[in-house]
Figure 1 (tube, rainbow, N blue to C red):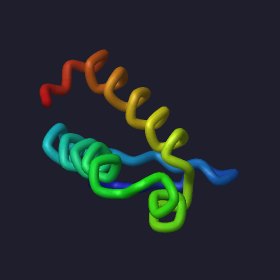
Figure 2: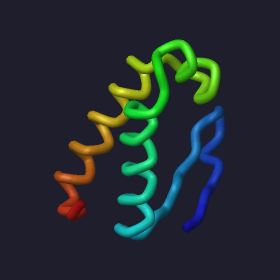
Figure 3: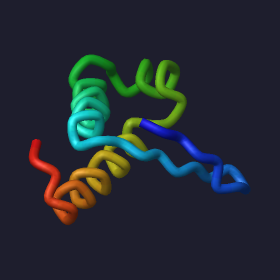
Amino acid sequence: MDLNSLGEGSFGLILTGDELNVIFACLRESFATLGKNSYRTRIGVTMDVGSALSDELIHLMEREGVEQ
């Protein structure tokens, strides 16, 4: 795993397939365990933002052939 600053508030995160699956599983589990109000408080974004990020991530994983 590696994290690089790309400047202007953007970052590049390099993960193995296993690491990516762990991150995705944690993101998905957060929807099941947190209500909308506590999601915003604990995660820092609305559940809608988290859900959109999850949808985008799963499509990227599928595109790149990462098995879940």
